[in-house]
Amino acid sequence: MKLVSTPRVEYLRTLAAEILNLNGRGRVIVAVDGADAAARTAFADDLAAVLDEAGTPTYRASLRYFQRSREDVGRFGAESAERHYRHGFDYSALRRVLLEPFRLGGSTGFVTQVFDPDRDSWIEPTWTTAPVDALLVIDGEFINRGELRDAWNYRILLESEATSEADYLYQKEERPRQVASAVIDLSQRHLPQRVFSDSC
Image (cartoon, rainbow, N blue to C red):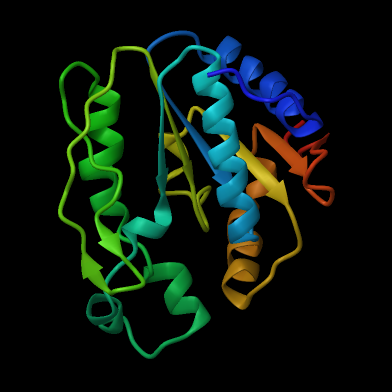
């Protein structure tokens, strides 16, 4: 479906063309990082829509739905920003049911959600398949941490100051700006602007 042209959509079309040109055919995973959860999710949604418009089937996921249960995370000690940063997400499940099967291609099924953090309950898995050429856009907190970095073909960082102690720890330890493929200023959300990453 052709999207209505706006400055934001036109910017995203340029970004989508870059992603597609750099990665060619096959399965491609794009990670969207940033401290502002609402802005991050909206940007990932819009980017997925633009990539889909370009003719490549595109799927969406969020680390939000790969969090640990309250009971599980409680095993790592008292509630704190550091506990959330180090133990709040189940990266093993993320790799097992989403990233690895998505990479395999073919008729292998993958799951985009396993846990509902609002209800603190598991989600009945819905297995999805995709064509040989497909993209996955995934957003989330701390998404460019070391143990995940190898999973992404393209890394987007929506630039912002740390908004929590957990995000401060992440930025201090992982320096996501240094590994980003694109750093984007969203201070005017309708008019994204590319800025130089530390890796340039």
